[in-house]
Image 1 (tube, rainbow, N blue to C red):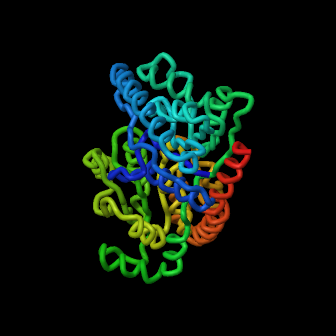
Image 2 (cartoon, rainbow, N blue to C red):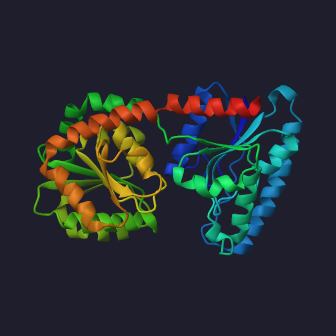
Image 3 (cartoon, rainbow, N blue to C red):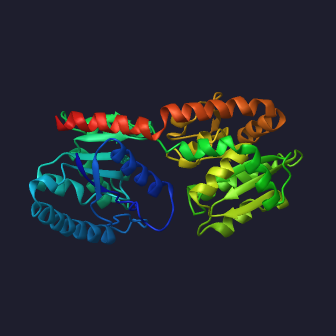
Length: 379
């Protein structure tokens, strides 16, 4: 099929890295791997972080004009070059889709959404215009691909009798991580020399953007939890950057010289870092599922994380990592301590994580799921 792809939260070619941008790119790659022809329909960002009703109305008006322009543009093409489906990634009240439903209606094509979420409590809140637009778009969808099982309960009632919701496991291209695992020992020695840290010390790793809100809350919980473990030998590697860097540094200040600040790293450098480390630690406060958690497992790195949102969908508690209840600092510290004290338990967790990730969360598996769902709505 010819697919018009759109990501209202952040376009896949946006200069700022994020999990959203990464998943948008992966979805396009999965569509391509499934034999579909994909084009980016628009870079229009409908995201509103402030909850300003006026701004949301202006974005809606602009979205309507852009949608009309897209319909005219597509109709001017020969029939064989027009989109056969519209595909929107990550739709919710802060980033509604003002384009897709209108274009799909104008062209008479299916409207597909991946990772839609609906929060009834936002109906009369500051994002009420965006909430209404997101709800209307979800109601129009012919197909919803759900990346987070926790979203289905609120999304399903919006769908019509002819619409369907299909579970799509969060996924990645596991190949770079698998390649790094094969060279783990040499990569670790090289990183040890470059970062001036001991190879025989336990390397804890966290990878996350540094921004206010849930990310900062996770860093703060991590700092409090690890402060309880200062009697044990370990160091913490932190990869990431962002506007809350100062607050993150303050949150981890109590850990002193144990913290190695690596800044923002490329995907290639991250694959090396995951493979060379011993344990990934991230409280995942209000995380949808967490791409970094998936990347860590693809590199055979066991994980300690919070049991929240879609995180249990990608981490098998006791098999590929350890999950603790949301916000429980003491339980998080206890889980990390257990794997520090019993290093022999980490390797089987990491091995199981790599195998499970390759089997359930690889690009090929995602391509099959998406292609099968698209074929059903096209028939």
